[in-house]
Image 1 (cartoon, one colour):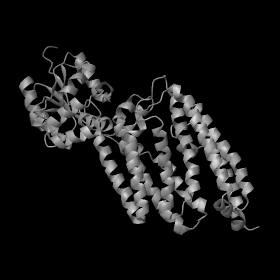
Image 2 (tube, helix red, strand yellow):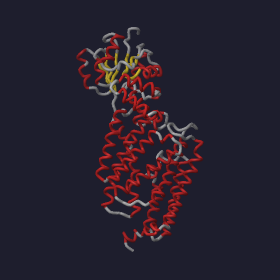
Image 3 (cartoon, helix red, strand yellow):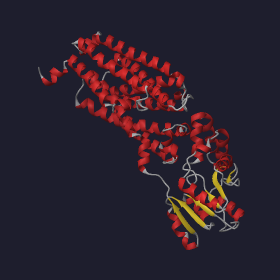
Image 4 (cartoon, helix red, strand yellow):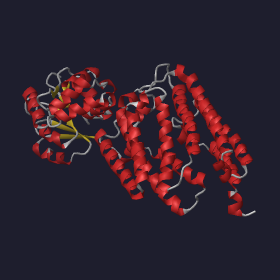
Length: 477
């Protein structure tokens, strides 16, 4: 079919379920944040130069980018009919040209070049110059594409673009394909199942035996604030980890990596969640605001750099869990014991090792984990550090039991020693499950859903309450 008119595909949000400009920005923040921010600051008012500078500074794996399956099918049918299938994008040519080659499309591409931002009227002019008026079919996804559809024979519309309803009256055919995103996909990106980790904020209340509403209510508000703050950081982490997630056997299905949710929507969600978290913190007290700000800054540092550093990442994870406990004390105005902080930190070190052990056990090869500093040969070292964490936690708990503070809160010291048996059993079981790959990728989430493990923890708490005399206080006898 020599006379078959070419099919021209927009890239961002159309052929790809992502946006190359935002991909470059977040990849740059993850690799060279200062350089990326300087590029944005220098060229924010000149989109063409901004895209060219980011493309030069931040190489992208365009072969990993999620393709819209509906449009890929249309492109394959067009090629079978003998049509030339071209890419036309406002993204930079340095990214668009290899993308076309990777998918077997025409080497003739239309893209921004550092001088002209090929969008809207500029793109329409370039395509009309190449193919003539009504000389091509064009697939796009947003109102800016109306300038191009006005000169096309057929408009292929991804998702809902209300303005296209006027095209048939102008003699332009319209083909609608499914597109857009769903709120449930964004909800998945927020990871509400991770909010259960914020139950750690209640630990100071339990340790201090402050079972009253005046203490509990602000801690519950603090848990909500931490949930929003954590979700904001999860979104940032996912945006920084797009390439690594696409190389992972299961994380490749995450909303941003798979293209189920646009990156710009994630950026807006991050801003809303972060502002809400800080707003709630302001309603409590300055100490809690400081703690949640520290948590968010540490989490950002972890996402940007620290998670790629062996052992530092585990220490940072343990610190982030410990900060939750401090936050609970700040929210409820409860004095947190130094013994308690020293006790829980090695527990969280062990659980951080369990997280990496699980990932390495479930890995399909001996290469280092994408975006991490560990490979399967490190499993033995991780097991040893986890074991040291278990021993350290139990030793510190024993020292606490014979301290003046421990004896004051728990008169029956022998019951604390007895509680160390299920406590140690729970910790050893968690390490073993991680070693054999029988856990979730997040040990805290797994622990709060593991019925057998929860039973062991409840037994431990029961013995501690008995040792504190709380059962007799609550139920008499």
